[in-house]
Image 1 (cartoon, rainbow, N blue to C red):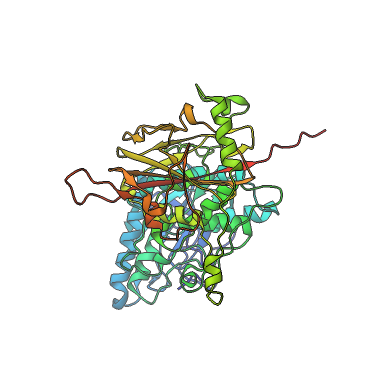
Image 2 (image 1 turned 135 degrees about the horizontal axis):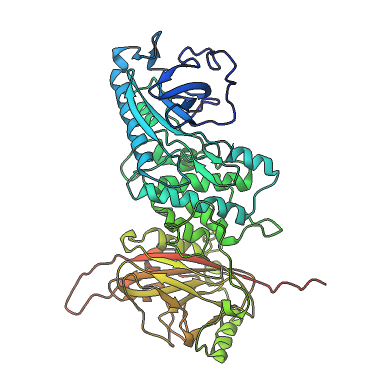
Length: 554
């Protein structure tokens, strides 16, 4: 089921009652709201912030510390009601278990938020149980929701604007994910933008989910377009995890760029009508940024980035994938280096680099054959071979325990001028293989190991910079996106089943060799005398866009 319009169950700002107004029921004639002047412990209620189906948020004054706070009361209106005093009672014994489960979840959420101290997470000052229910006290935030902020912009935000928003949010989510906790309610109206521009992620809504799981009397809060399919039902193979929040965050980005959320995930299981995001004529978004959002919106849980760190590495390939842990709340988009220093690599053989560029840019595509078509003129046309889709499939079927990351300082490079370079890291030592689909998608290379450099060992948790000086790669065009895939495995791998042709300086796969992704992951070469060995591998994917040199303005 989905969230009904106008049923917010979160910290709402900007709609306070005046303290001079008499106490009155909230919108809809609710009699559950406590009147102004009510004392709860050391807090005096001075106004109503908002009321939803699972809780009520009041403006209150902390008499001991002399400050205004937001006080949230657990009040599931479908299960419970208030007596003439402050006491909350269950409407029927049939609801007792559900009410109690929700109250425990409410307190657990308060404990969770009190445990974390991140500027992008709501802070809980205090929580306690009394009067048959539970309460938590939080700072009173003033600001506007992200939904309103996007509306006020009047145009889609820039990539830089979105990254500045994302980094503290993703750092906050990453911190709770490490404690095996997940938000599962990320949406534009659940993110607050403070007056200084910093974002705050609002309530987790844990009680709603627990109660919703236990009784049909409650509405399970799922926002169409923002909730991935695994939130609709806990089924084998589709468990919830960090990837659940990754999907919702990607849906939020899709909404910010396109002005509307993605189609509901359950409908996409049957007929995926998601319209891919496209870069605007003014190049507001890089191809890699949009591709990262598309990958994170995969319906299948295993095909998405699995962590916030992994998602950030795809969104901003110019930054290290592990930079989220120390991100400040007001983190700015990383600045790119400029000038020749950005691409300088010690000991580059310039002549060789230029030769490689020519090889990548000028080698003709293999001529298509017509024998098969001529021999079967009535047969259906074969599906075109898509090497980028092959790389994505290899990546999707990786063993995530390897925790392979790949990043670059230059997500965009100028044709004929700049060099491709990137960094890799793996949680386990192994053998590294690097595949690349060129910017015109007509060349599918095995870049590493190669005829120039056969040392493809990578040590555990040690950064490896590629290309090495002896085989630097200069952007050779045409304009477009290079897609690179790094594969790391315990044993050496054999790619002959994919038709790999060994040639200098780099090997190349034919483009008409089928679509079975498994052969492009390679087969493990087991040690002598050992018939079987581990076929698992880790992987990371990266895109680097080649662009024409900008024309100097006069």
